[in-house]
Length: 186
Image 1 (tube, rainbow, N blue to C red):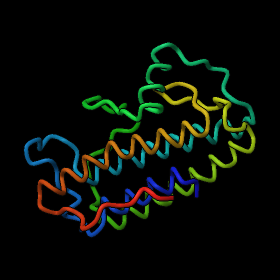
Image 2 (image 1 turned 180 degrees about the horizontal axis):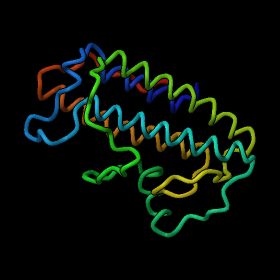
Image 3 (image 1 turned 60 degrees about the vertical axis):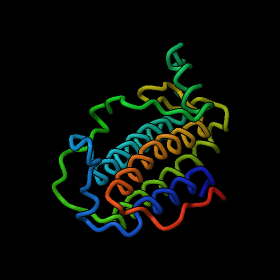
Image 4 (image 1 turned 135 degrees about the vertical axis):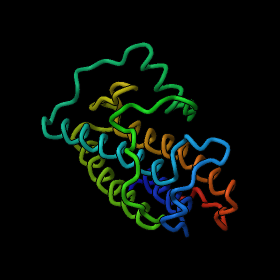
């Protein structure tokens, strides 16, 4: 697996380690209207599914998008992908907003679901890299516009880490902190 996506997979596993299905329903105590741990992960899973659809569409056409990034999209790409800053307080687009939880999942189940999506994304990114190279902005993100394969990987990492910080904060607030910090080695 590509080192960027592998790092994300390890960080997800660390963040969810040892949580049972009731613990994944915890929210920030001071902000009970915010998503639960499971809903945060479901948001990420919806994001991965959307990315899979976007990449599959371009791979099926065997042609990159003709879209060009707008000035706001250029700024968003620079801020998020180059600087690694994900803005706080933005409302998620409807297509990646999790529904109310109907089936409780434990941390291990959420980790497995994420690992499956990330493995699929890794295969799609590898295929896109082979077909389009690393610099061609071949597929468009709904907010950031056209991205190249490494930008797609980096987006997933930065977006994921943004939400994993929220999960770790919820765990800490409920005295459920994981034992060790993950290393950022490949």
